[in-house]
Image (cartoon, rainbow, N blue to C red):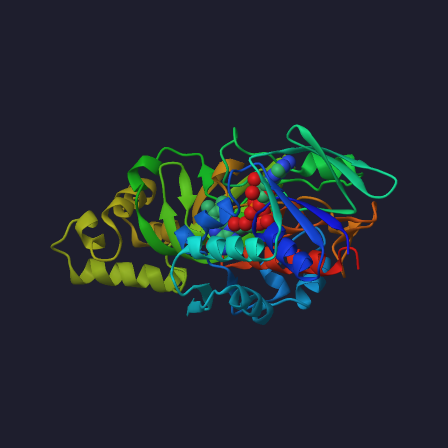
Length: 397
Ligand SMILES: Cc1cc2nc3c(=O)[nH]c(=O)nc-3n(C[C@H](O)[C@H](O)[C@H](O)COP(=O)(O)OP(=O)(O)OC[C@H]3O[C@@H](n4cnc5c(N)ncnc54)[C@H](O)[C@@H]3O)c2cc1C
């Protein structure tokens, strides 16, 4: 049994702490926040969508998705339910998305607080870990004004996503100090900001549609990602879950200095020909209506104005515009407005069976600071529970 220091008391760090302490280790958990699990409180709009009934490698993105897939293969939905159930969380499931039955993310934080206390985990809160050194027998970490020695260290520092820039601490520098390298990092699961002067006109519209991110290469504009669901049209561009799901592909391409467009299809379940026929049919049946009145009942008023301005009144031009409304992407929302960071510490530098660093024995890395992120639906917390458990189980074994 030995001394384990965990930097970051978020979802993955607390999971590692509980798991390591249950195996008899003396665990210290450090966080620069004055309480544990702060980000968990904001998850799932305060309800904490902690896992999903569908768990497949396709739900995760990384430069090395096969490694992420193998890490997750040993810890899926069932294991999460068992682990959180053991802490006291009863699940409630809605369309495959799991939440605590209480409907409160704060319950998840509370049960962790109780378990950490019960297991005798020492907390060092309100203190930032600013330096890490390898010593003869382990590690020496500067925490606030003190130096803490440990046989093993787990870095669970998360990312800067969703945190105001003044408050984000971060642990990438600590990982780099230990010799680790980072992939390209961009905001993930966030809104897409577009160029164009129509946006104030459609702001506030929520409508079913497909969003497709394409590279603008002057030839075939290849598809980078596509998703369908409720689009939220905003004064800066496009938001809502489908935009979130594809945003990292737009952000990565922009970071690679590529030009990117989004194409919106407001009638994803109807072909352009069928839509044209529908619009012509409405025109013929309702000749007494103006071109604008003819579209009422089919589309939100704000979109009617946008489409008519863009395409005029002919059914052919309107159908083409509704099926393929193209916008140039300027950028995605900044990291502090994103739900997750895409990219991080390279998975090839981690032993996938244990989460131990391949570079520094005795150092472990977990959670969002690694180069793997999930889509919307509880997958990022799943990654945190899975990697935290693996590290907690393996440390000082
Ligand atoms: C608004 C929002 C909603 C979300 N909703 C969901 C959802 O419903 N479902 C889902 O699966 N995921 C959701 N996510 C993503 C999910 O919350 C994260 O992926 C997950 O919490 C990451 O866990 P982690 O342990 O890796 O990092 P974190 O939970 O971020 O924890 C890292 C901790 O390390 C601390 N820290 C960092 N550096 C230092 C340092 N140098 N010294 C001391 N402390 C340090 C930080 O203060 C932080 O507390 C959401 C994210 C946001 C922002």
